Length: 361
Ligand code: NAD
Ligand code: DAU
Image 1 (cartoon, protein in one colour):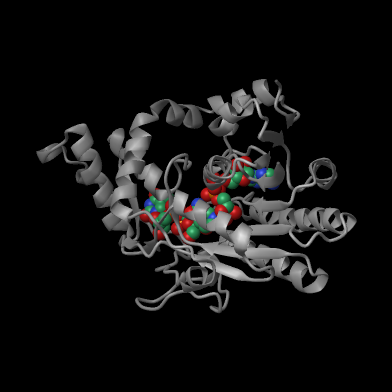
Image 2 (cartoon, helix red, strand yellow):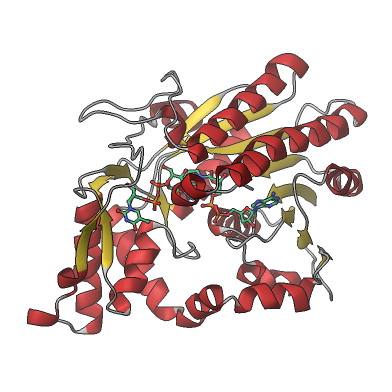
């Protein structure tokens, strides 16, 4: 049994990744270190804690808590770290940028220091990997043509993307300066189960169900390159096992869509499920609202390198996986009520204790 440490594993992509990796690698154990911010929901993975083989351990903690992280690393001696923990929402970063610097920049630096120390003390094991999960937003905005490659210059627009860019630089500096075996991935927009309903796709699904207005920023023609979360998880597992230290890999779905087209598609999918037609069609709820400041116009990933060098390609088609995502949200109304009500914050206190620590058994 070999252990990997996942940070931020109670969030959207992290929780999908943990389920995925435990399913495809029966010989792996996962330790999930998560501070359980508003975006983290330990209940997403609570069923795994009952696993009799104890292949999953949840630890409530902050990546900025170097002492806690150092103790955990010494105790667990992971063969790899997959670093998801971050403040991840662009709109929140516009209103409160410092939390993004604190977690994404300072937190990543502290985590790197702790991991490097463990790696040095273990005699620099050749197989160890630190995988930093980053975003295509570090590259800034594209015009109507072209794609981001791994050589595209960084040009972040929001406090979120600037903080992720800074963290990418730190990770690369750790490789160049200390020979630390770190890898960076930069991925496009994900969608799928367990995404917190403040991001475009889950927000629109929920608003359509509840017949609330659908706020589309600006003219709705901003383009995102959508990737189903399971495709991202498969790419990360591939990079963890086959990626080369010091390298960067772009990950994308090859599914560019304008926001307004995605929203209209969601309206059509849900109208079919909910039996809405004629004057009650959900498109009536669309409202064009004031644009996001510094709103990047278009993202598009060239994922050629990871395909050529590591053999990864996305498997899911956008239209099919979007319909599955809609079906997941319709079937998980309790999850939605739970994350929206603040009930899950109370659950953290009763289940994990207000002061944090490993889950009560
Ligand atoms: P998320 O906001 O859903 O989850 C983030 C998780 O990190 C939460 O569980 C939160 O509790 C935890 N966390 C936050 N601060 C922490 C801290 N100081 N210490 C420990 N844990 C902390 O985010 P996500 O959408 O799952 O994104 C995960 C990672 O992937 C992020 O680094 C993000 O930048 C990157 N990414 C996201 C996307 C996307 O479309 N969502 C695309 C590309 C890259
Ligand atoms: O590109 C990868 C990034 O994708 C990740 O690094 C981020 O963590 C993730 O949040 C996501 O960032 P975006 O800003 O692209 O995602 P969001 O879902 O917030 O917005 C997607 C697009 O939809 C964007 O152009 C803004 C627009 N939008 C969003 C919301 C929430 C709207 O038009 N209305 C909305 O209400």
